[in-house]
Amino acid sequence: MTKAELINNLGTIAKSGTKAFMEALQAGADISMIGQVGVGFYSTCLVAEKVAVITKHNDDEQYAWESSAGGSFTVRTDHGEPIGHDTKVILYLKEDRTDWRKNVKKISDDEAEEEKDEKEEESVSKDEEKPKIEDVGSDEELNKTKSIWTHNPDDITQGQYGEFYKCLTNDWEDHLVVKHFSVEGQLEFRALLFIPCRAPFDLFENKKKKNNIKLYVKQAFIMDSCDELVPEYLSKSPPPQSPSAELGSPQPVTSSGMLWTQEDLPLNISREMSSRARSSVICKNIVKKCLELFSELAEDKENYKKFYEAFSKNLKLLRYHTSQSGDEMTLLSEYMSHMKENQKSIYITGENKEQVANSAFVECARKRGFEVMYMTEPIDEYCVQQLKEFDGKTLVSVTKEGLKLPEDEEVKKKMEESKAKFENLCKLTKEILDEKVEKVTISNQLVSSPCCIVTSTYGWTANMEHIMKAQALRDSSTMGYMMAKKHLKISPDHPIVETLRQKADADKNDKAVEDLVVLLFETALLSSGFSLEDPQTHSNRTYRMIKLGLGIDEDEVAAEEPSAAVLEEIPPLEGDEDTSCMAEVD
Image 1 (cartoon, rainbow, N blue to C red):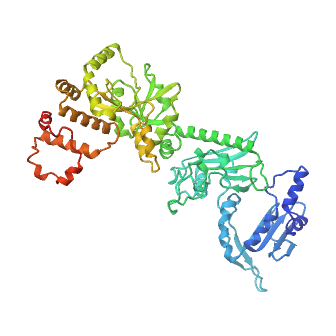
Image 2: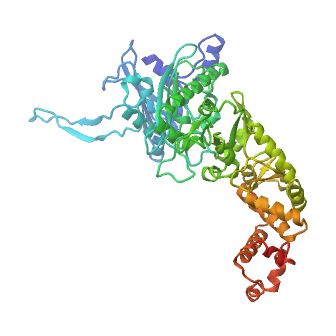
Image 3: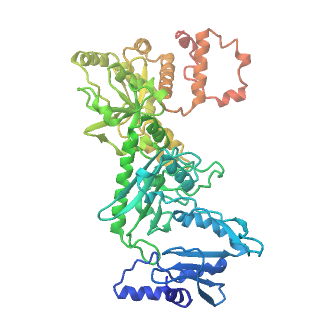
């Protein structure tokens, strides 16, 4: 500034910057106020006992403006170190306001300068030829972060990116990947996108303050949480906390490690964006670059595995383990590329990889050479409710009704014969189980298991049922409507089922048959991923079967049985009055 501008702009505390802004607005002037001096300058008097402004204009000398907030000021020619065409503001903080230095890092990280030693020259004595130099200390550089996003990406090393990332986010580890780019055209801006190595501990905490984007306009810090410029699903992936931070006390972070600067973004006097259309264009470009970054990262299998393990709960990029992929994950598009010609649907299941790999549901598909995708994350249950098909192929759960595997005519003919043969057993099983199942049918989709439980097409799976039961605020009165009806499928080729059919045909009123049907059903519930309504009764029934198998006489262990009071609390087992029939099982 010139001397006249110092006096006019800083010398009159009553000068209204807002009034000048409104007058300029009515005259059709540029309404961008960022970088302009206003009455907000005098807020420095709240924290500083003295304020000094050193400034140099190309058309004037270098001047120093000083004020102690007492209603007066001085303007003098400054003979200190030349600063060029620039302005320096010096605040002499009050003793009780030194904590405000912490804000320097947040607001002016892009204005970092090299540390300079402060020297004071003493007067030269007559008998000395050279002046003495006394070192009185050095300035502490608070804003150490350099504005590397304004530089050419080719001139920046990975070490500089890592140093900038750690300083910006307080993360103790290096970032996973970075994308440095600029956009030109309708809008011009530069940006840095960082992806951290891991998700934060409070990834899904909605009420915490989010610092997802730091915004700078004309080298001036505007805000550290610009929600309009990035979708929420991308703002849910900030870096983790530093080791020194307490759990639940998030450090200042950026959304997906993003930081960007914009040169011509229109802002109003309150530093809010005045153009929604421009912010929408910026948002689209940021999303596009994020997706490009994910695609580039996918080419690095090792780093992408780390990224997906950390953020797959938030970003469902459709990578899963399958029955043929081993320890590697497969893209849904890759899965489709090696589907069999006669395969019309995509077969999915879930809960955990180890359990589903050996489940009865996957047996038949694996035996016939069909690949099954293991969707084992709880969030996958919600994902498949919206993702009904992919690239024209319907998603079908192997744990539900409606699974149809290709069959030849010989298999179909054998199935019809089995239906007639096991019709009586199916009817008897339905009568015994009553409302516990909706229907009982035979199935040729079981290999080594005698039976399994499937649910209706539009009902909850066993995994979803577990998830809903675990909700703290669930409405128990409505869960009965949402829980799917259970269908019992039995294998006609399994020896257990065949022996049970023979016993049922011989005497359908045999109490042993009834007890075995219930035990078989409850075991199928457990193996199919469901939980038992009365596990104690199931345990007692199992213990009794073990005793019979070991040839233990009930009368011999009567003295070791629980007291009468305890026995009254245990529900009677079906078939207790006919132990001789149960002995035949042995």
